[in-house]
Image (tube, rainbow, N blue to C red):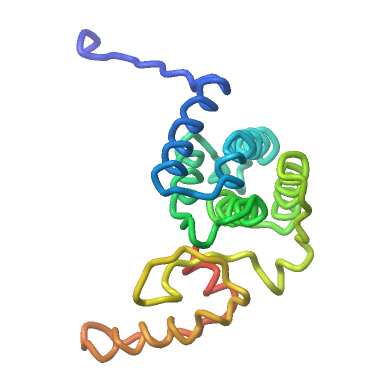
Length: 204
């Protein structure tokens, strides 16, 4: 059996290599979609933020016996980039809006996995620090409990425009409509209450 047994060791790419990979990937996306000059000029800032928040999460939010799922890897970094590439040039027109989209994707990929208030507050601290250092803006994380930072792509049925919600209740009528359609189809009977946490879960 040992003659058919092999071990492959694949070390993580260096930060410099990751920076080049995602600079090319996101840069090509911004160019092909014809984003504004302000957004295109923020490419290096955005990629730097992605790498910094990834390494800060990996080094500071560690798994424990009660939190064995706190394992972050390059797949999460890829999910972060994938979420950013849902951006629309008609909505993400400035560097500040790009920073808000980055914040939402970080919450979706990293923060949604956290289970304690202390861990969530620690993540908010790292996210705020990263954004203030690179984008030079400040996130008011204290308001996110009542008014979470959310994006979705189904507010307009005629086009899938990935845009920020002004209020989490804004999409509740649409979710109720989808639920009604599902019930009328006869496939299943759903009785869901779309409270804030449920809406956040659906959108992320």
